[in-house]
Image (spheres, helix red, strand yellow):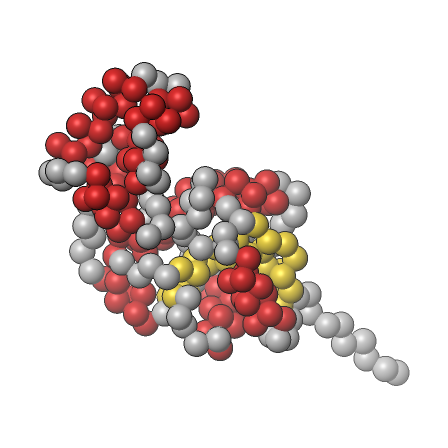
Length: 216
């Protein structure tokens, strides 16, 4: 009598990254891994959350810095709405602040974009088997003391305004986008500078890049 050896279900993955070439590269790498299937892709956090309302992957692999809703915010939403979905961060940022914020929001894995290709498979299989994966370099970051996060230093409204300032928008444009008066935006900007002890827009922009609010 022949035995029926059923093939195990593939690990279903959703990719989120705002760069089409990066997503294509990761997808091509995962296509060479036996038992792994990329079932959907998203360009930002909003697209990612919309996808997860209709499909249920095993793993989400997401960048952190994306336009609109960033990866950190999206991870928190995924953790709250879909706690069974495992989230691996695939990022170019390896600062203590980024790693700890990602983990605090629910990420169970963190991988650098310059990692060797075999580590992609290693991270996926480890997260599925043990529930977590952190490369040696990232694990070291988790042991380091945190610097204050942007949420520790600024209010949510100030973070919104700082992000738009760093994107090069004027007080008038920011006021229109957020439904405020230009004068209110100016007051917020002055308070942000005071709280961060920064003196000009260039310094504010560098801070926003360092904290992952915008891309360099």
